[in-house]
Image (tube, rainbow over all chains, first blue to last red; front, side):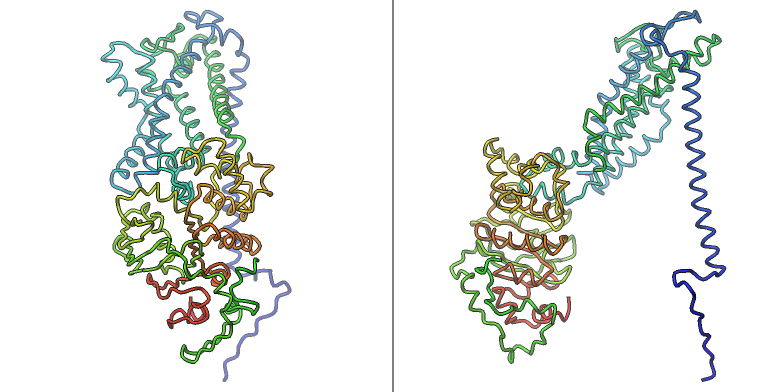
Length: 301
Length: 296
């Protein structure tokens, strides 16, 4: 045979990849992807940090006791506070959670546990996804048409309903996803012990997915706590204390929205202080919920 | 292991076939190497048939997975189901407590008689059935609850009184040879146990409700050899009081723990016989090929 077989040189280090053009390209693209991910993350974090610091710097000097105890002063007179807005926000989010969470949760349970891949569940899933994407002002419009117009008055109820409807798809979708992650063996193990389906879901499946469900609920609450648009035509705003849900009600985002474009510097300052309060309030609520439901103890599961 | 259950006598049993596949001659010329005298001490000739399965057929939608399976499950004995992957042994096991009902589009025909009632009957109360026929799964499935609550789960389902639950939990954990390892941390999460402990916990949980039959779907396949040994000892021990059906990939395990063995292939029960007989004198060519390691 006249074919000469080229003998491959034994390399010094068998783990050292040969320096070919192909390997160089692989190395470079690898470095590029890593660098790109780091850069994008750094940018995103920088923007968020800047935003937080900015609000902190602009709002912190105007945080005082009056802010939490007094109502706004008329037209730019110094002093006053946002107590009515904080109270209103708490009532509105509470009202929204009151029916947004159970409706969302049970929809999620249906989708994950009973609906399967059937045509009804597929339809519901599609609708829920569409609902998540609808601009929130549409929900405000809905509440305006069905509650504000018949009642002939803006009201906290209308605002709560609008916010609650916004919560439903968020809670439903996140709970469905985390419920699906529960291994089927757990359901079977429970059923094999003679448990009914409802007991299995309530005692085994939901507790297994608890942390994920709580995360979904907290996310939904945080999301609606900051909603402004749907409240413009429902809760409307109110410069006085009001805990009557049939009457117009103030909310922090509404107050911030109104004060931020005010000609009076005092009100602009209060808008920043209000923003800070809103952020902290959301943080406290999510921590409180996690703490109360024991979310910290079980960690990863 | 208890020598009472060593049905192979003192001589190394056919268990060795997997390590050194015995070149078995054809049936007619086959000479048994091992005496099966030991088997008589374990095999009770008057064993009652607990579940009598007759002509079971099973379909996943249009695909038939079981073909005319007939097999008696003897009371207070261990029946092993062996066969290659996808042969239908797990499917068959799951028909016995109607777990397949959970899979949409499945259909079972034939009958499995338990105390005069057909398990496959549509109108049967599956919840009541599953309280009589417990199940242990391939992977340990502890609930995200405390060790105590895991074992108490089935009892709470049945509405057992608080005092009785206390007793049953302890008795079941003792029975599953887990009590000494967990008695000081009953209130801690079951997820903190090792895999082998979790599986024994699942066995304790299954026997807590006092079922008559225990179905085990490859209960040791996810465990290390030591944990496997413990589970096997436990199975032998439990067979004194419970009727056990175990699916296993491991033929040595079948030989070690069972008194009867059924060999499945392609959805058919090829051969059913006392374990010693099946391993020593397989009547069918397929059985012999499988246990001598020629396929599977």
